Length: 194
Length: 110
Image (tube, rainbow over all chains, first blue to last red; front, top):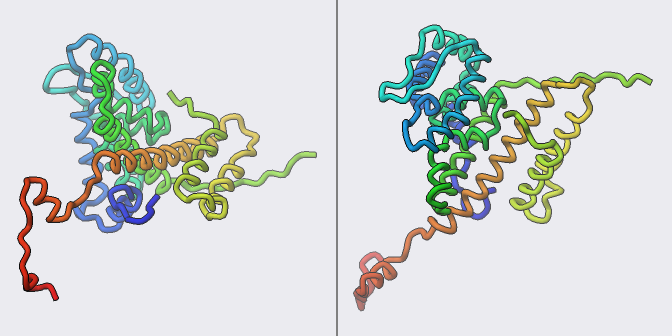
């Protein structure tokens, strides 16, 4: 990847390691969790437009299933809204997520916060980390409005694709970081039955 | 929503990325062996919905996405954003000026 010159801005995994190690903002798990939950109030997929109808439809078709999934998976209520105030998140929902997030270690939470900031959505981040969505799907859903505009008005490679690939690589790094910081893999060797 | 491409496709994809970044000697790199080893380890399972396998597949998919998108991002960056710094002479010429020449050389030059 790195050839003649080191390009730190593409070394996302390294950056994440450094962030977790240095903890420049001097926060603990609780504070990171609180910040993440706060994001739910401005979650991208909860904020719906009222026009144009094509985009309204697209948001309904693409985002509703993810909302359904997370509400079922965690037994919570989130909902979506098209007014400025956004959705009203019940306290129980936040508590449930709080409990769940506490099971992650500090490194994994650092990665998760990174993903949430990139995708601008807690729901999509959960979808990715729970492996319900792939990185490409999560990025597409995060950029739904941009993709809609691109479909209508055309693609500008040096801006649109550039942003998309950057978002993809950061999100992919975040997802890998969370998974690698959390998993423990064991291989059980079973004997073949003759 | 969770339809991932087959492990074979992902594996091939990762190896292709390795080849494009490491060059012709990619088969001798540690990364190559690691990738193949990981894929082989997860091949044999007698459970229909092996959780570890799904997790590994998602992780490998994410890794492939990371490699491919970083490569594309860098390519686009070089193509459109990477002119870098110009020499002072070039900058001056842009606006039609010329840098003055000092006969004795500038103070700090030997």
